[in-house]
Length: 164
Image 1 (tube, helix red, strand yellow):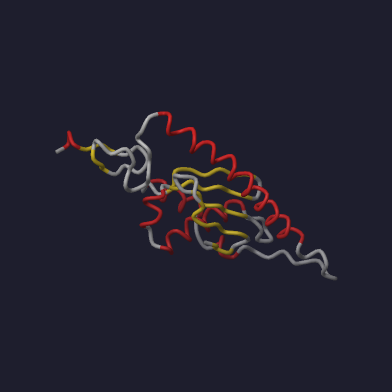
Image 2: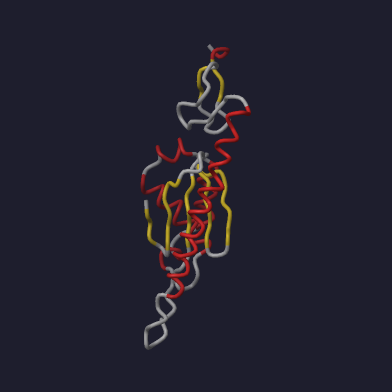
């Protein structure tokens, strides 16, 4: 039976040896000719996501400028209650999170899509919030973006609010 199966390098699930695409995470086992179209899509999505992210951060940073009194610094209370790095490390250990990348007040979380969609919503939110807490400023501004194995948007936390 083992000779009839292989393990997907993306999600570690067992699939039939003849499979060209993993039924769990949609990994393409095919030739190198199939890879370039996927890479062509990534830069295009970045051109749409990065400006939107910049606008969200800019609005978050400048929304209180018209107030007569300066805004008070608020603690990011949710971030004080748990070990953010410990939560991320635990998610990495069980294979849900593949890695994180910080970019100023934003963090990008790359997850294994097949495992992410099977995780409970509370767990998904806690992973995203843990990443947000790693970059959140004292006034609560920050962004965590969750991306799947196929570069799909799976949710985000903006200024402490989960969005799907």
